[in-house]
Amino acid sequence: MRQTVLQSYRARVEAGELAADPGQARVAEALDRLAKALDRYRPAPARRRGLARLFSRHDGPEEAPRGLYIHGEVGRGKTMLMDLFFAAAPVKARRRVHFHAFMQDVHERIHRRRKTHGERSDDAIPAIAGELAGEATLLCFDEFQVGDITDAMILGRLFEALFGHGVVVVATSNIAPDRLYEGGLNRGLFLPFIALIEERLEIVSLDGETDYRQGRARGEPVYLVPAGEAATARLEDLWHRLSGGADGAPAELAVKGRTVPVPRAVDGLAWFSFHDLCETPLGPADYLAIARRFHTVFVHDIPKLEPGQRNEALRFITLIDALYDNGVRLVASAAAEPDGLYVLGDNAERFHRTASRLVEMQSAGYWEEALAADCS
Image (cartoon, rainbow, N blue to C red):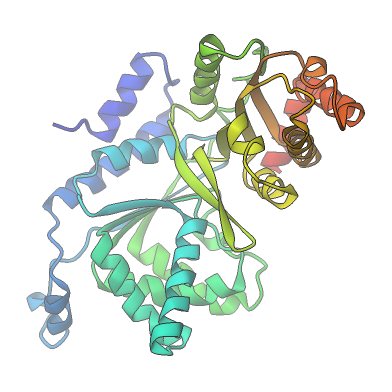
């Protein structure tokens, strides 16, 4: 029998993994109410939903439970609570996805229907909503945000169609619904979507004075030497403290028409190996995309680089430049201190600056400045 969200949350508090937080407990209770409603919910087949429109509302399919929109500042534990809910939700047909990746998927489906059916975007949306509803009754979105005019114009019709198919939505976001697409072009056309969200989802705030990222790395080494099992275990411990107990999951970044895999990501944190980043053919655009997407990057098993590894050294230099220039925090395990990572070979002189930056990126001042920028 699955534990409820609140039971799982309390177990983590009792184990010392989390600090007790009334706001988090309140959100856990709201998620449990939804999980209980989902256990009783039996969405009607698509054909019945269509026929139901011909009859009175009492003859229609069972009304879907109201979903949840959880908003709060970065570091409040939204993703951790979503982890617990997704594990507890009594729904087989479910999908959890970062909202940006979801919209990429929608645009790809629109493009395919344009090619195969000659449809305009507006004409394709009902069919795409039907596809999505057939794949998942429960849609869980991480980091719900809207910053693109194209997305803004699609969302109203798409979500109205999804709700019409009985899809239940749970979303986490750093901002309240009435601030979505704030200052965006033609925002007036987007306001009906906000009204739809407020009607179909319960809005729950997780704002509070405590940012659970603060202090977690203060006084902790964030560059561990030597790399190995012990260092990886310490990185895991710091990951869970920075993430509020969330494990994270694989993700992808879209960069110039291709994807960069992220082995593990959660709420602004990303985890890579040195191999993932520097022994594969990535370039400046890829590192910039990582730096713009994540506020903290973990890199484990950085080796001592030999003269023949000039390409790996150059990629590492470019990676650190991107992270440093964007104020991204680095947590790493390495075979040597920064000035011992690449002593001989092409670009060894240039690596001196990289070593200097690696030292600065360990400082409390760098971390606190990066945290302040992230919260602004």
